[in-house]
Amino acid sequence: MPPRSPFERLGRLVDNFSPGFSAQVEELRRQMRAGLDQAGSGQADPQADPATDPATALAQLRNETIGDCRRCQLAPTRTQVVFGVGNPRAALVFVGEAPGADEDAQGIPFVGRAGQLLTKIIEAMGLRRDDIYIANIIKCRPPGNRNPQPDEIASCEPFLIAQLDIIRPKVICALGTFAAQTLLKTKEPISRLRGRWQAYQGIPLMPTYHPAYLLRNPNEKETVWKDVQLILTQLGLPVPPRAKTKKV
Ligand code: URA
Image (cartoon, rainbow, N blue to C red; front, top):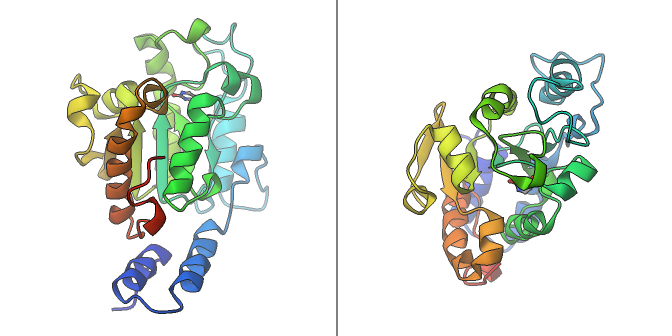
């Protein structure tokens, strides 16, 4: 049976390693990057049908549904809503907790120190930030980076559910306790959840440690690298040879 997607073709290439491997892998990655984020810019294509065009559906969700959200008590202290960024057709979505000060200032998730480490992890996977999609459970910065409160989660979670429903990724990676426990509706600690496949609405979900935790506990980078290798394998993507033993 012919491969149905670039990911499947990539998986087969790995199985049938050939001298043209690198060029073919690069071409498949290029195909996966096609249709990059128009939603991140907030520009909906007025000609496109949101039912079939995820960039337009995400832009509608951002601009029309969420808009200048005042649904919870975070609105008065935030600078802006931090919606999400990346490829609207991403096969992999990372979900974090909530924006911090840098994200609140720039309107983009994971751009501070923890975000820079996440970018390194993504690049060590052989991917780029615009291949994948990044979002948070909470779209507005809690003051002083305190933990989000249950009523804030209740107000905001429907938007993440809608994002995931539009993107329909093949894999979700939940970063840290808060994202994993919220998505999986569990109280199990991340140390027990991580490294084991779970499911969110039928989508394979891999919990792993949050990059902010890795900044405080660099020895756990090796653990996260094990988890992201499982994700690459699930996606039918090769584990980049140089990074196999490398710490991110
Ligand atoms: N931590 C998160 O969980 N999300 C961000 O966007 C930044 C830091």
